[in-house]
Amino acid sequence: MESKARYRVSLVVPCYNEAHRLNTAAFRQFLEENGTTRLLFVDDGSRDETFQVLETLCRGHERQAQVLRCGRNRGKAEAVRLGVMAALDHYEQDIIGYWDADLATPLEAVDDFLCILDRHPEVEMIFGARVKLLGRHVERRAARHYLGRIFATTVSTALGLAIYDTQCGAKLFRVTPELRQAFAEPFLSKWVFDVEIIARFLRLHGGDRQRMERAIYEFPLQAWEDVRGSKVRPTDFFTAFWDVLRIYRKYLRG
Image (cartoon, rainbow, N blue to C red; front, top):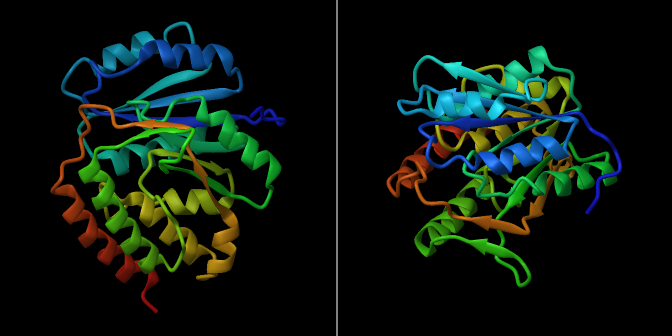
């Protein structure tokens, strides 16, 4: 796909102890090939050399790449939220999103996402979906896949939306007043904040699920790979179910 519109895009990349996992060459190539896209790396209180690696990565690309350093580890949810709010406060852009630092979703997918936004003006947010189809390279460990499907069914029921994959770490949003409101306050959950974002948008839209179904587009990724060194542990799935209940009680219960 080739995007028609030249969107100004800011991508927030949360990083925690990623010094030895960051594919700096891929990020540099992306910056060189996408002059209207900005990368905002959020160093979430890393205890290794992540900040130094990020500083080196951004050197020579200062107009497109910056590092926001957190003094202590706050978790992925808060790192993403702080990055999105910083981008809203300091940059002019049409699209803001966040992308996992391990590049489990290749950066090439950004252009695929922008094509969808270009073709569908009613779409406000586009989420990567890890669907294993013929002709696509989507590799997940079996245990995480099956736990993920159980979790996805729970989330879909709680939200009242037929959503397939809330947890893929590749998402873009059009910049709207509602976007700022959705990210204004810290999230309840450290890991399933993606579900909370949808719940917040639902509340902002008065619980109108038909509107949300038009606003969200799930894009089946061409490639996704389970990168070794993930911070998610098997026990986090059980915490995630409890967090979905908390989110439902706060935002969705009649």
